[in-house]
Image (tube, rainbow, N blue to C red):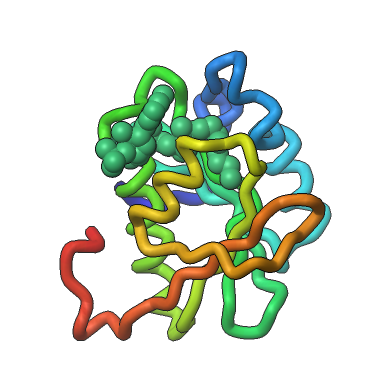
Length: 152
Ligand SMILES: CC(C)(COP(=O)(O)OP(=O)(O)OC[C@H]1O[C@@H](n2cnc3c(N)ncnc32)[C@H](O)[C@@H]1OP(=O)(O)O)[C@@H](O)C(=O)NCCC(=O)NCCS
């Protein structure tokens, strides 16, 4: 899994990624996220998540708190869910953040989103007790790359 820019080649596929109906309140549409990133660049970056040549997911990364990238949006296409790609996508985001010298990742999650909360906890995010817009905040400390294994 790798982070890839949204380009002329893949943008239709990225916008066409879908969620299950009962997941649609958990995250804004990719089209909205791409528009948000355009307006707020370079603070927001909207990478596609590619498995092989094709996008299977999408994320929005925000550089706000110095040194701590925030992940405001993260999704895997409904047809590709349940195969470990969510975990692999987080690993790709973590690898990028470590390569940039970041020490932590932060995100918040809709309280009723049990699958995402479970995934984040299993990946190593800890809910801190902070609440952002009604959503519990979770943070993940990043080990320096030289010492990290099993995150690819
Ligand atoms: C959250 C999401 C990204 C997970 O993607 P995924 O590719 O299915 O994740 P994985 O295959 O890596 O699975 C992660 C864990 O969730 C579990 N899981 C996945 N789909 C599940 C489902 N429908 N019901 C219960 N558990 C599920 C998996 O079993 C796995 O747990 P495990 O490691 O203990 O086995 C995906 O469900 C999604 O896009 N949801 C909608 C958008 C969203 O909620 N984004 C997060 C916003 S904060």
